[in-house]
Length: 282
Image (cartoon, rainbow, N blue to C red; front, side):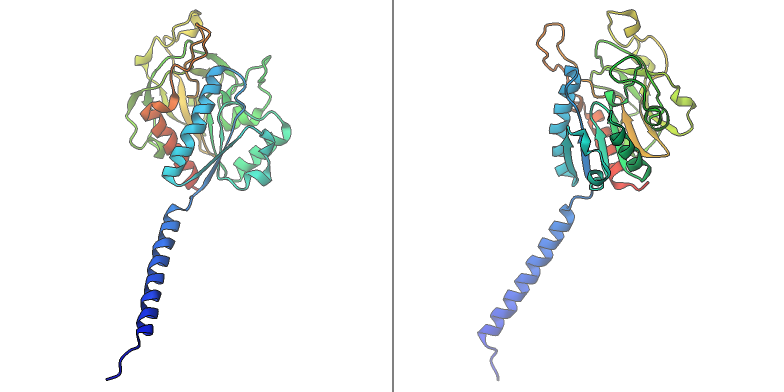
């Protein structure tokens, strides 16, 4: 009977362990490889409520990105809104403002027409003639967002009861009605219900009225239809009117009194939106 040398057993065992660790490591790496990349643009210079939201977003998104296997980057350099830079990202966020430079705007338009993903928050849709953010970008405000020019808002920032208007992937596990975080709510010049390309996903429920506390009478809404989350079927996009935290303006402390992402239904909705945008095709 011929005995097998111990060296042969050692080599066999070593090879077996190598294969085992290689398979395990490969599986681990594959399972944890980021599935898409998000880039958030922001300004964070005007209005303490918007600045507070930007800082909150730049803390919250990296956490959920790690948990859900995508990459989150952010920048205040709007010159990065160009074809070469955007080619590395599948989703673009506007956390507060919009691009003002013609080249930046054209690069974003081409990115969206070529199937890029987009989520805009609150002030990113603001446009008002004779203001610092004039309605001078027709494609973005009228065709892409569909909302047109800003018309008015509620004040102070107050919570609202939001109602699901249409079933969609981002509505998964979202209650039919829920109470939002405090927010300054916008209304628009265009009637989004009449736009066949727009799908309204959430609107303010009538049980919210009166909404706002004033002091100006027009800052308190008593009736009407107000969409707050919608998508445009021609693009891979989502607009979310939330993004204005409540601030202690009255006492001059500028202390944040409420946080958008501390509201569970809202944060789940936004995360669902990011995952939908990042994982879906045009």
